[in-house]
Length: 356
Image (cartoon, rainbow, N blue to C red):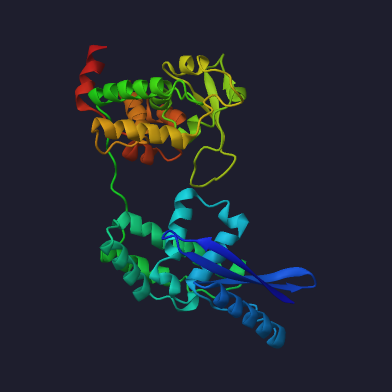
């Protein structure tokens, strides 16, 4: 038994698209589901009716080919996959859905198609590291086509294509960031954030920007981790806190870690109001946005909130902590990544170690 449904979505340009989804059942159980998106609702409906009629008349072939666009639609509609997909990957998949490569059949994808896509993205201003995400995330979706959706997909083409794309310098790794804020920049940021904090003091939510900035540096935590800390996970006696589900490439959930609250970070925690179960009950995006506005108003260039994590780690190394001890704060399992990516020492501060 086959049936169809029509869903309307609005793309970035404001135009409407109509996704026709075909659902095939056997003995009351869904055995397959596929979809196709059209520009007009009437066309989507006609296509869906024709598919249902063909399935009812000829039966259903459990494996078939479709366009990459339809495969991406299926991936986005599969909640067990989509809900466990990171925000960056979701953004890239949605973007790919509106690219020319989405028109290619899943079983006919070639290296030439991938080269053309990368050249188009490069022509639009995307950098090799950004384009690499396109290829990596498309490959991830293509690998799930057969086992999840019974769709024939030529995902092995990526084994041939990636080395070629690297040789052509169309894709590549991102450059290692070494940016740390200077003392002057930090003072300006703190003054600007203090003014912003005072300006918003009478609003519905007063965000303690200064405390959060200092806490982020002292603990080397990501802003999302800061805003997820719970009072129940605080150990005031040992001056530690549990960071739940800490980012780990090998483990998505349950990666809880006890982190020491060094420097004055414990004092910062204790002066926060107990409004609810969270120590810093604020939206991490609001904090990042406030930081960016102040940074831009001060004319500070190429400084990201995440750079504060590098600043904190570098300070700990400059204070004489070992790499293993710093990893207990940052949460890194790979010490090479910690040393290469999150460390940028100021040479002039080595004199201070001699003076101690």
